[in-house]
Length: 264
Image (cartoon, rainbow, N blue to C red):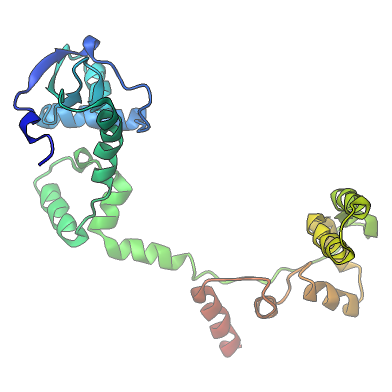
């Protein structure tokens, strides 16, 4: 094994004030997480020594050091990794965090453990999971029910009613950016086919005022309203809008719409 003869074999107590955080440490620690680590140290002890280099530079354990400062510790247990090169230390700062994140959970066994701990009145917050996560593991049926309820609400078809005067056509769409781009394309020395393509693409920058479009729709005759619906400027018929590809809803919602049509 590489560096086998250099494996650390001692834990030493080092003054907190002597430890030097790695300036390029990309792992972040929120105040809430530091408080969690501090609570864990108080409950279980400082079970995971800080990993440091020969110059007391922190390689792994920045969060634990922050928690120790919060608890006003004077010294913390450390393991000195003097066998690592500067490049290896930089890499291990990342690896120490990422390798732990790559692990998974057997959620069934986790739920059993959490349930047993709760039954003996152990504070489950000390496990690192928040209240919502714990509830999801202990009562998965409730979680599934909550998610299911999001898609059981009846979808009401919008009703457009006039609120004021009919807007002018010029108020329905902002063409400024499109016109500026089109002018630039027309002046460019490019192939006519490319120019035509870019001019069509420039229409993507049109900005529609849907509030005014809805008001305009209310004042139009049936034929114009149908054309506006086909253009997806307003949505009246969800089924039709989905068929035209303007709306992409979850299968659960589509099923609701189908069932309501069957019942009608």
